[in-house]
Image (cartoon, rainbow, N blue to C red; front, side, top):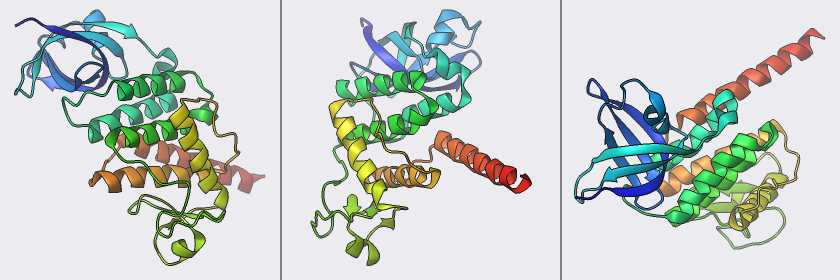
Length: 269
């Protein structure tokens, strides 16, 4: 059997036996695959680096229909994200992207568009300012939802169809924004301010157009947390299972520490 070749984004890897590793990749040509790298833990080198998470590599492997695992023949790095490797916060955002893919995408489901979204999001997170990292993650989550076959309703109340300007809540279960009246009836989670609803709309426009300009709206930390929670809960509800994204838990912990530090600093003035 001749090996096949594809660009691949490494989602995760772990030990397999004494010297080998199992690498989960999202490939441009074949979707998500699990590759056995025999001897992949020996000596590191270029092969070892090409199989690290958050790398874009070209992989050569033997794809067997009906088999859960494929044998890796070779791998070479095609693209690295050096800023992400040096910055724990950027790495956490990038890790959230690949964790989301790993938790939501079934194996052998090819989607070249999704591959492009993953690579573009990682490239953004490697380069943009820290203030723009949330925007990049939100755009990716909406593009992921579209790839999975569902996207939130953000132009009108998902329950009653009202398009008034007071869309002040978000229902992960119903799948979109809810107006103030429906939100008051318990149909959605309250958003900190009405402007958060507008931010969700702007992010959706950017996600569809491929823009990386950012939403252009200044948000408080609480408002940013609202957008993050709304999109995460939406993906869980629509996907039908808990996602348990460790990187997002880590980011939330960092934000709590930052908030505590700010409050302590204010108290000492």
